[in-house]
Image 1: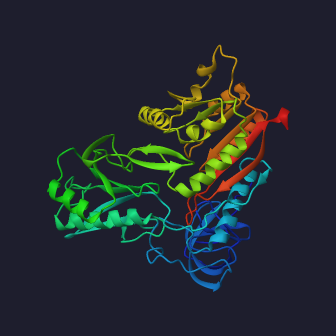
Image 2: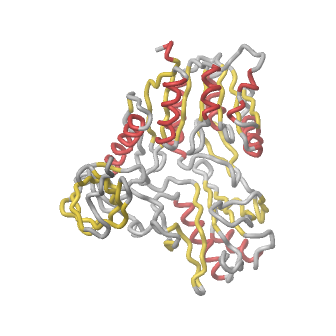
Image 3: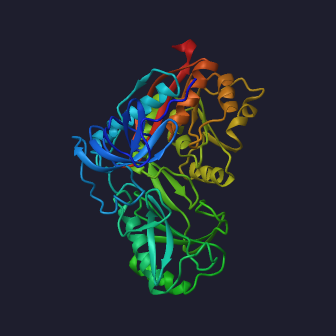
Length: 461
């Protein structure tokens, strides 16, 4: 069969009507059924664009002018948005973002998963700004000044910024004051090429419940910071909400931001957040949802799908620091959490104790090995919850959940593509049925979307 030649060539100027959005937030247009991705465009736009790269099945283009504006196009409030890679869809109205994210989930589930099910409208925020409770920003030396910000789109350059519209205002203040203090004391950024300097990243973590902020300074080694006591005094004086300053040691090259060692320079290393009336201790490396108001919405959906009557055993896989387990504990007979990171399990046990929750137990182990917990025990869990990383679940785990045959299976996902892949396996090989999927907008103005899938054995449908 003769290969089809792409209908466009590199550097060609084309006119496109944008018909949809990709999972990365780029506009999608077509020429003779050939897909062209155009960042910073909106479904409904008609644009003149230049092809910048060409693949066998698609091309990428940059728009040169907008010939017809979509009714969903808005002016981004952030002056850094045209360059900064932290957000992808700030130029789309928020109501439209919610519709497009619902469609992204639907497209993934149907095209990748081969499943037709009910995709509910996306649960959004009343005020979708200044919501992130954790900021992690790289630091670079530029002459005598420090550049602090997020990476530029499609680049490793830093967009130097003094305010981010999706970060909690306490994080913005903490980053700005830390930059000023480091600069005044001439504490330099780390240079990966020359292996010189001190500060690799600044992380600020804030609590909506207590208004506390913990500041983490990432360094390549454990040496004391230059002018450390002066730095601590300056930060405490200018950041009244500061409750702790931590030095994190990360000698490894690459993209992993935090290392495995922490030194408390002042105060405490953790802060406390509250969800659903429960309080949670959050350490520098703990995973916790970055959007507390929407976390309430997410957990409410999980609770609704679990439909607990007070007697069930719930199995919570990838339980992290135990937030979902503890949130559901007062509605269940027992909740068993499984997590591979030992420190997270320690945090989960502490969180259960400080909330006076006595019907939870937490185990260190791989989610794939869950059958070991129930060998010789007839009380298999009635409800199973999984909240895996972006890569989704291992097939062995899905097989083992099939053997446990829970009456309700809830899959929480931050990646519609791997969710769809796993749902395909569950429906084709393990005889489950996907009843419905609820998208939850945990990350407004970005292309990311969280989903909760309600799954039951086909025999119960």
